[in-house]
Amino acid sequence: MAGVIDDYVAALRRELDFDPPLAQRLASEVEDHLRDAAEADPAWPSADAERRAVGRFGLAREIAAQFAADAVDRQARRAWVTLGVTVIVTFVAMRLRVMWLDDNAMAALAPLIDRYAFIAALAVGVVGWFAFRRSFMTQAICLGGLVASVGAGIVRADLFAQGAPVHVLVAAAAEVALLGLLAFHVVGLGRRLRRTASLRR
Amino acid sequence: MLKGHLDAIVLAALEAGPAHGYAIIETIKSRSAGAFDLPEGTVYPALHRLEQAGLLSSAWTPPPGGRRRRVYSLTKAGTAALAEKRKAWGRFSQAVQTSLGGGRAWPA
Image (cartoon, rainbow over all chains, first blue to last red; front, side, top):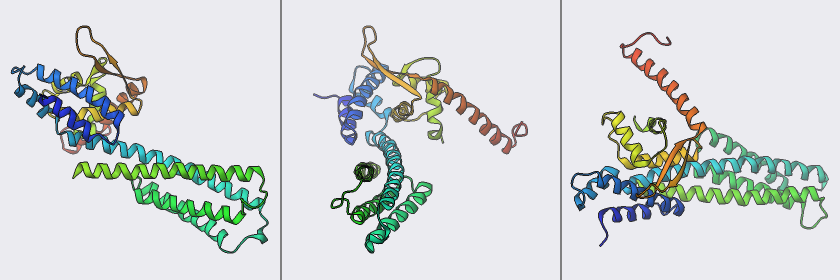
């Protein structure tokens, strides 16, 4: 039959399901802590000693919520760094495309989307950096703007049809790869924010 | 209020040498004469956060004839961060003390 400490450690492991390696590591660490605490209790060995040790430790859900909040901060940092790099690479790729293209050959709509979606993403990103650093929405809007800009840029330059120079193609490939990485981090941020909210409910 | 200073308190508890989570909590309790009666589990998110920030390092150590334990130690950056947090706290607490009318003028 599982003891009070075993039940508590199992509950903590469940609450930390958003980060399996952390759950694994913490389960062993917390179990050691609780056994030390229970053994220091005058009533040891008994279920009461284990219950008191668990009671002093705090609710598994609250501890998991603190870890989840820290995970949100780390994920937001990763997303912001990726966003910053993506913006720079997109700008450079955009300039390379413009330098390569004959301005007169541009279609009407694509250059507008290319330019203004990028500017919108940049503006939202700057405001978000100062005011909404943990916001999923800010990151999602920036991602949307950059996807529109890069997509329009590729269409504008007709990269698949024409014999574009290698440096233009490499820059476009870097843009697309970074957008994929950014999307991965933005989705991760959304997932961690939802988990933190559910643990605090 | 304590939560905002927990990282500094944990760093200070490790100043004397490496320790595991339970020993850190015991040090904090005894140093504060029981005034810091926070849930013991609160220390683990702080330890993890400080380790991620490079201020602590940790490793499993098998003690002779006992359970293996994850032991934390201050890194060089952690020692420097603790000194910085001490200075900041000194300035802050003196300013509060002065504002409350119980200390010498600030800045000294």
